[in-house]
Length: 96
Image 1 (cartoon, rainbow, N blue to C red):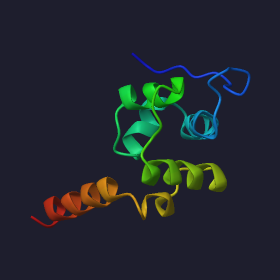
Image 2: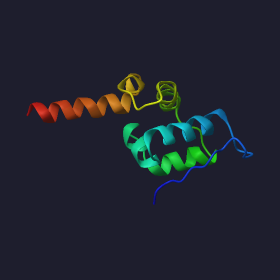
Image 3: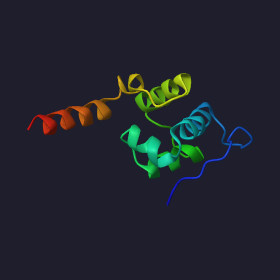
Image 4: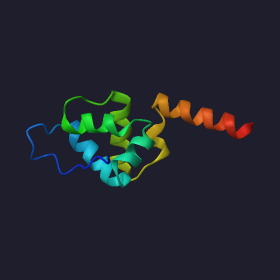
């Protein structure tokens, strides 16, 4: 089930986290694309979108980088350990 996000700044639970997430989802073209990019799950994004939990700081900073660049950019993943590990695994499989 795709996560549908509307503008959050009119909600009581609007925080910098929910606003950055909402904008990053728009830039990515959808929650599933963003979740894949961040090596997260749509369920995690849904929790962050409702404000019931905040994303881990490295993921939040990656979303800030996406919003600042207005695109999914590899630079956003530089400090994201999970994404770096995923890239390393991919390069190992590619070399085999």
